[in-house]
Length: 322
Image (cartoon, rainbow, N blue to C red; front, side, top):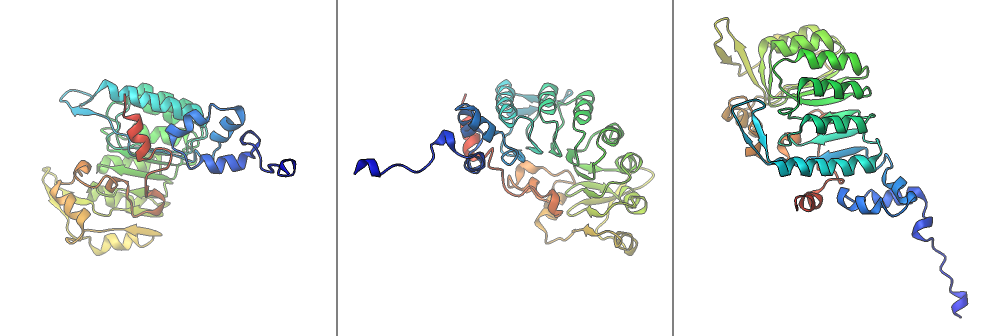
């Protein structure tokens, strides 16, 4: 009889939150947006920290051209509006639960974008932002001040590194991990030694590194546990400014590095990444190579692996439509 065949399952609005979270975790940002508007229970589930552990914008790029005047990058207005729109959605649904945020090296943010992000992600522990072209010194320092729980950062080479190292030291007491993409000289090494002497992990992968800077790190950073100089272009800079490429590390460098828990080093002529560094003269032109290439690192905790689910290829196509 019909009366005896009662439906024993739960209605969607009566589902347990942990079950909803498992389901919603398979959705991307575009799909989560309307789902979060269904009811309070669903919005709460959509904002769960398990979903927002990592917000990966690794596919999102700006439409830009390089210029000769500061900030040396001109970004199409539609790219800025698209970025602002996506950030509004992400920050609204996440409710401040983002722990790790990853941006593409060709995504160029403005001060207002960074201000908006830092205000709405107070518990950020890891930031991967390889491009600061349009971000001012004041804006990045204000963001760091809000991110007091920050532990790890990937950043580009900057002209005057002491100011950001000092701000990190002042505001982020648990900071232990740094990756620099670009060039690393004596000034950068001295700034780290002065303000972040207890840094534990440092990656200079695919960077142009002066031997003076490398020796400074190995001689003075007593708390350093992990150092990655894989595929770097190592240079000796003479007093007259002349530069000479170092093709092999000497025994003294290896002896000093032996105290480290991990020392990653590669200058093989057979290595594809090393070959690319030579061709690019020490400044890696990432756009020439696989789109995942810039995300890799020999240090496990710094390797970004595959693109995150929250902003996948399908999400990128949908948000590119005006």
